[in-house]
Length: 621
Image (cartoon, rainbow, N blue to C red):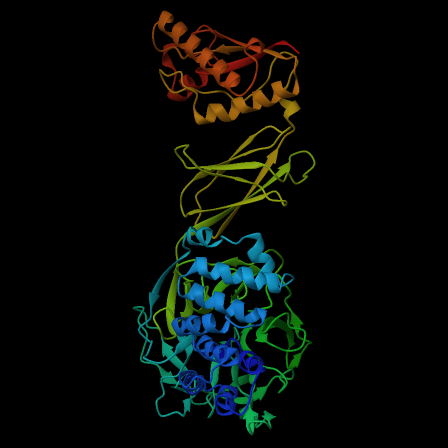
């Protein structure tokens, strides 16, 4: 991956501190120039000649880490960690092991990292949930993923769709100078046109935006008149010097360009750029008032963080760090803000992921970041997620096939059913409530416990009806219909009444316990209602109940009396099975003698169903 646009300059500069000497000077200079291909060759020559130590092994491993060569990185990290190393080396070793799919070995290195840096957020997250990978792999996929035809044999990444124009960053221009980081040409911005049949045209360079240095990725304002792009500070002839190696080092700057006719001009750097740090990968909110970006500027929690800055015409505010809900002591980059301004997507190698960089999303108004899971994420680097709401098309980048490529992410139609359980009288949140989702046939799909906000989320298929059942001690269980929906969300307010409201002078009033025709077994719906009776009887230790069970008018009187008696006994047995003493509840079959709906032999199916019921009389309070 082109990690210059994720890790910016931080990784390369930070890793050359240590036991440098005359023997390593030549290799160290290549490393300092980000020329990791040649640096690795130089360090390996030292190793072959028996001149390697822990420092050389670590430098070798970091070279391959920056090139995302997991096989060679793990080989040299293994050698490096036979000597004394800092905590971050063990973290990187774990990352490369995950990228190779070696999760058990990665956990061993994470344990070492956590012991050396116990206060690091990455260490705390690992200790709290070390075996998170199986749960990540079990997540329902949200997108169908496919490689795009615009990819080349070189790095392609950072796709952004504006109307029918797809902009992205690529190293395909072989006429360009070769970059020593990965032996590929410098990056340019390209554009491809989306046709009505869903195909993309042959990409062409955006000459008015490109410079002699690295350019891209970009984002475009909603009105199409303003671009923000990443480019080298060399573009402004700004850089820092490393006298030790006689080097000039650039930083990533963010620039703004405005449209002049059919071309882009007036390219100006933003006021918070600095040669002391890098800023890259901009994403502008649809209202144009907030710019999100990645930077290792002072105040960052780790290497590279996600920041935001207010935009008012030509004026920019003071950048604000998005904090620990988004950022870690690792690296976070490639922010993308959704059209509604609520969801931020970003790449991170510091949060719990499948390997390398994973894509996450977070509600900018609060909440924890969540991993998008497979197939968007993989054991390799996955990053630069963007989404065009109007076209319902997503894009992301990944090196899962060896080279950075752009992938289409087509949403799988799904609905996030968000259920919040509250007290119907006071609107008090009821955390710990049991929430069950059922399909339209009454089959239980899943049961979860509400979090401290009284909320449970279920991700289900579009255009299907469901039912939510919610229960909580001292409250009457509730059942709530979920109508068919195209998503993306469906909010259900599960308001539960205090359980004592169903206790009357002479009876406990439940919703009717219906039975299937000619059967006496307790249905799922019946069990849901009977659990309310169990709760009432647990709250009233002296209460004694008589169950009166009824049938519809079909069948003979004798048969119906026998059937109702079996239904009464089944009801009693269910309640007793829940821990209620057998001497506190009895049942009596009433046959068809006391219909709820007196419709005789002309009852509809619905009326017959209403007559197949049970009642719960209080014999003693």
